[in-house]
Image 1 (cartoon, helix red, strand yellow):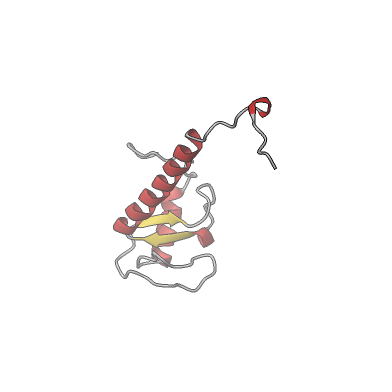
Image 2 (cartoon, rainbow, N blue to C red; image 1 turned 120 degrees about the horizontal axis):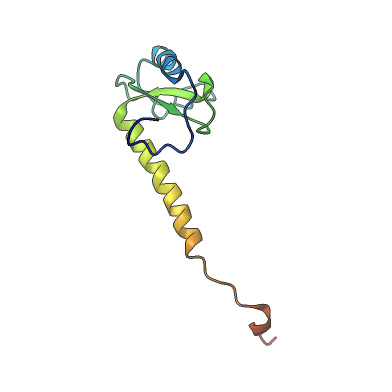
Length: 108
């Protein structure tokens, strides 16, 4: 794992070779491309410098990897981190449910 990385799932042995294969296949940034379905929605046009996981972080098949430029990779990683942090925050402050013995039934 690179120094300063906050990656929770380790990369497989031979990740460098996988990256080279993906970057040769996708020479231009495929940010916004479907990837798994096949047809690209849009491409930014910048040179791909990094490899992005479209699916799960532990799935390293070429079908779920895409070449992406550094600014778009930072944008996507930031959005994923913010979504995970937001989910944890929402679970942390969940209101406690009152004990059933202390609930008042509404008069009908």
